[in-house]
Structures are given as C-alpha cells and as structure tokens.
Amino acid sequence: MNTDHLTQTTQTTQTFQASQTLQATQVVLPGVVAPEGLQVMRTAVPEPGPGQLVIAMEATGVSFAEQQMRRGRYYDQPPFPFVPGYDLVGRVVSTGPGVAPDLAGRRVAALVKVGGWASHVLVDAKDAVEVPEGLSAAQAETVVVNGITAWQMLHRTARVRAGQTVLVHGASGGVGSVLVQLARAAGVKVIGTASARHHEALRELGVTPIDYRVGNVAARTRELAPGGVDAVFDHVGGRSVIDSWHLLAPGGTLVSYGSASTRDDSGSKQLPVLKILARTWLWNALPNGRRAHFYNIWAGRALNQDRFRARLRSDLTEVFAALQRGEITARIAAQLPLAKAAEALALAESGTVTGKVVLTP
Image 1: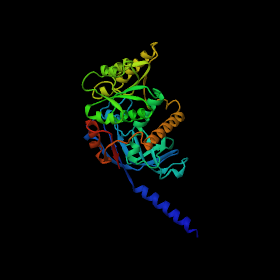
Image 2: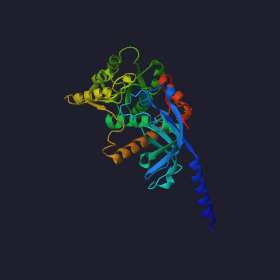
Image 3: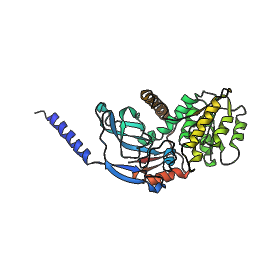
Image 4: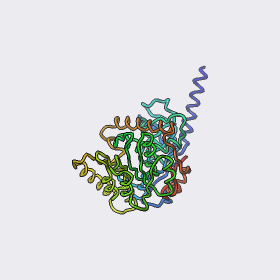
C-alpha cells in the first residue's frame, strides 16, 4: 500500500471537510449610515470558480473611498447593501480550475474596489499581485490603492522629471503622503498643503508645507514658485481645481483625482466629477501647452483588461520595491480587528491620525 498517497489523501479530505465548517466574517454597509451603522455578518467561505482564488485577508484598509461610500457619495459605488473595502492583502487558501495550485499559501495583494472588508475574499487570479518577502501584510496594505494611485499619477499621467516642482494637496493624507515621498525619490521639489500639525513631518521628508487652513494657498505657492509649478495633484475638487490650473507653469500638468470638498454635500454624487471632467476638456482645448487630467485608477479596464492588469502589476511592483528600499514608509495609524470596522472608520474620518487605518481578521 502507498502510505504516502493515503496520508496525502486523508489530509486533503480533512482540509476539505474543515473548510466546509468554516465561516467567513464580512462587514456590510447597509445604506447611508453613521459608522456605527455598519453590520458585521457571518457567511460561508466562498468557493473559487474557474480562474479564481480565495484570499484569507490579513490586512485591509480604510480609505477615503469608504468614507464617501457610507455617505452614498462615491462616484460609481454599487447599490446598497454591499461589503466595502477597496483593497486587501492576504494568503491564498484555495484555487479554482485553471489556476496554478502552487499559489496556495502565498501572500498576495488585490485591488477590488468593494469586498475587501471580509475575512475571505474571492478574486480573479489575474488580479492578485504577489507581495515580496520582507513586507508584512499591514505594511503592504498601506501602499496598495494609495501607492498605485500615487505612482500612476506621478509617472504615467504627469510624467514628472528630476528638478521639476510640484504642488500636492493633502500632502499628509493617504495618497498624498505616498506621492510626496515618491516625488522626492525621483528628485522632484515638492510643495505640500496640510494642517499645521503635519508640517514638521513634511519638512523631514523634504517637503515645503503650506497650511491650507490659514492664508491663501495660491498666493503662497506663487511666492515659492513664481514661474508656476510643473504639476498639481488635486483631490479637493470644486474651486480648488480652478486655482490649481492657474498655478501651472507653461507646459505644466494638472491631475485631479477626487472631490473631497463635496464629501458631505447632498444631491448628485456624479455632478462634482462631471464638472471637473467638463473643465479638463475645456482647458485641454486651449492653445497654451498646459494639460489637465481627471485620474481614475480603473480607466481602461473595460477596454483592455490584460493591459490594465499588466500595468497595475508593474506599478504595484515598483511601489513595493520603493517600500523595500526605504524610499517610502508604511505609515500605519492604527490596526483594529475587522469586527471593529465602525470604530476604524470613525477614526479615519476624524482627521486626527496620520497614516492608514488598517483592519485585520
């Protein structure tokens, strides 16, 4: 008798039977509610289909997107109820047909837009990016959506070069803090807006800070860069986008990537974005050599999924490498268990912490 085969078969059967008794935990956003309105629910662990895998979540984050979603203000969020969670990092626990079985056990990251706030997440295998050795799950989590966004805006959209000067709104925020570090690593001079309590930390990164709460940001920027800046990264939206456009030097680039100023507004959630798009189209029609873009991390996916995935994999790999080299740091504001997602969301929205609020199983 082949005892090795029998042992392997027995272990496989036991693992399968154990998986049937496991339950997954997920956090559900039932509608427009306060953070304490989030619901923690139990459900069956998903089974992977062809081309899919199941990730046992080790870390997921609270980003600005979830803050907008709970208000019903995110541009293309799904209908309620749904499980929020823009990205996650975890171990592959099962693979479906057509997926290399040796992926099981590996730590991967995935950008999912929704669904990340769960103990077990079903994803397409092609959307999983392996996390390099030496990075913890929480460290990697801090730079998935924030890192991809920052890298692509800086290097693909604005195409900054060493010696140039850029203005980063929200320089101490999730995306902004990664962006300023990547810019400095590329030899770019950075002016960053933030509240006064973040200024010393920004100076330590080589950033010239401006307090957006007092004074005139546009006037102060012109003092620091009389000829204009080569790029502005604006997540604020509204009037800020117009001011940002006028701060550009000849040949400069405006990258708008949000409408944070309208987070608490009522009415259409699409209108603020449509206004920005209309302005970028108008400005790009002007013969002045400056360019305006509205950055969307999902742009191009519907047209060419393979190209989208290849670009995302390449860019996240670059971000992970920068993290390993120490060019960017993993700023973790707090780590809370998934069951305390309401507390984590309230903390992230408070504006009192620096870095990413991370949820763990």
